[in-house]
Image 1 (cartoon, helix red, strand yellow):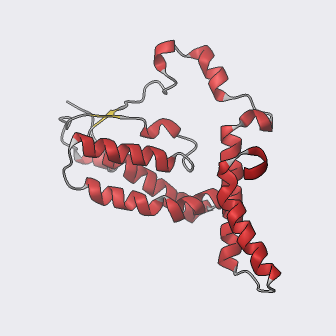
Image 2 (image 1 turned 90 degrees about the vertical axis):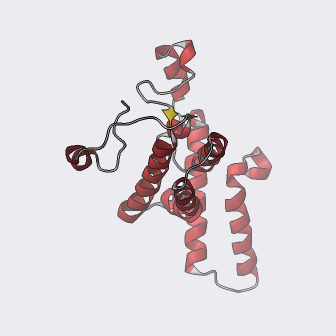
Length: 191
């Protein structure tokens, strides 16, 4: 697919498949983890291709229907979602991605979630550790840019969650016991 149609999302699957064929040509049996990884990579590449080119699969692109309902100044962002975040909320959003990936893979893991757990989860853990200490706005913007780029192939449902504007710390209300029981570790609203 990569050589015939120029689809780079299938590159890793083709490389793993070529390695598998080379093993079979020398009469060696591929290991079960290698077979599982090949299946996961193929599933992930197909899902990503379907998300990037929905018209090839008979679906109407969401951007075409979204243009009818949104104003031109909206830039395709979901309405009602705050895109201005400070370091605490950025850390919370990254931890939420991490938790949702780990839980989803534990409950009903498929090829996409297993691929995300192999490649995205280690980076998310490192980013959470990095965000535990104070950082400058430039450092936070670098973390956000990496997060946006790394999550794009795996987090297809909420693609705009990482599209944020970093600001100085926002003063927030103190989380009450009721807030913690109802909302968990979600940040309380600004003052």
